Amino acid sequence: MKLNTFATFLSGCVLALSTFHSSAHDIYIWPSYFTVDSDKPSQVTVDVTASHTTFRPDFAMPSKGVKVYGVDGKQIRRIGPYFEGARRATFDLAIEEQGTYGLVYERGPSYFSQYTIGKRDTKKHLRTNKSQALEQMPEGGKNLETGKYYTVAMSYVTNKAPSDAVLQAKNTGFELVPVTHPADYVTGEEIKMKLLFNGEPVEGLDLTIEKEAPQYQKEPQVVELNSNKKGMVNVSFTDGGRYMLKVKHKKISEDPEADYDITRIYYAFEVIYEQ
Amino acid sequence: MVRKFVLVLVLLMGCVSAQAQEMEISFALPSFSTANYHNPYVAIWLESNEKKQTLLLWHLKKGRKDKWLVDIRRWWRKQGRYGEVPDGVTGATKGPDNYKTRFDISGVEQFNLFIEVVREDGGRSLLKQAINLKDKQSEYKLAADKEIGPVTINIGN
Image (cartoon, rainbow over all chains, first blue to last red; front, side):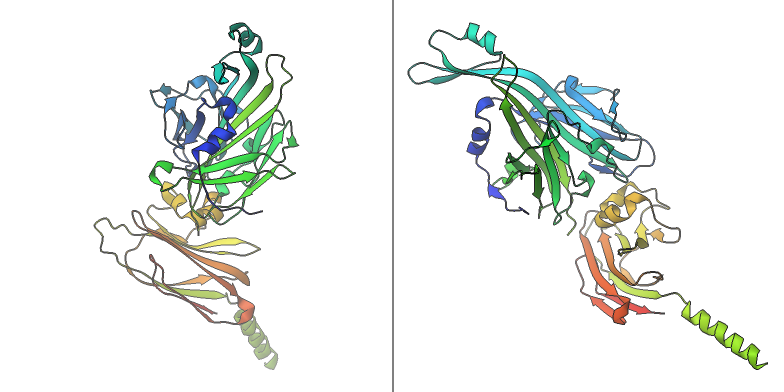
């Protein structure tokens, strides 16, 4: 089903989607150019930040989580100088080949516990696993829940003709896999992607796509979508621009130190206004 | 003697039937009274089920070394990024004027013709016309857009 209706975005939606981790920021990685045309080696600046506002840097992220994949799909180990400022981190991505590069920022796993206490069931948070939380939780604490969090921020850069190696599913954990090539996201044409867990389709998962610069709009432009039984998500846009897709997968954990495994994905992409 | 005449006649007829199918496009690049005017990039190309073919590409630099070609958005996605621009198709950008160019379109019968005009610090226009040579329509007229004046397409030999 083609969905291009922009719904009014309420900050409450964000809270509802992430009640378990309301203090967390979204993590973004995005290139200064999503599409380049270069025969000679060239550079694209990549920004890495954590923020609550789409494409507005707020907190720099350390280089530890950065993974860059080359046009052959293999990880590129050397990414050059990494500048970590106050609000954002940046590095220059060397574009030396034709095809599509993958940019990934991974964080986790990290444990996050929550319990309630007192007459008003006040919510309290601890950045600990379950057994540490049980030790630290004061007497009278109850409803302890621990989440094991993974965060993945992703984006793509294409030099000249697009290639597919970097888009292949790894079939481990929760993944968002582009079906329509990211270099072919244009207004008025259907964009397809799929959600997988260990290679199997994830049905019925809510996700949101928010257009850049909500602070300059009367109302933020947000699309709310749901994956079908093949794990597919189809969307089309009437406006060109940069967009941020956010999706969260939650499952019962097999780790005794957590109740849930939660993977959050943030996918930055560009839609070209074509007609 | 008669045989020779017949042979020459047949050869001449053969030449006529093998003559290239041509298309003439007349268009204008409008002038703008702006302090920051740059000649626009222009791309004309066709897309059919069988092939995509660039017919004209006016851009800033000689050859294909021009990193701003990505800004001719649809042309870039359909043609430019694959690097398939034959010699003799490209030229330097041109200013406001009337232009008339002829193209060899042999080998295609049913196609979409695209004209994309992109101006730095200006706008962008994309015109599209479906053409089927079987229709025997010899002339198509396209309405002007912001970056291009009215377009006339003539199909003929």
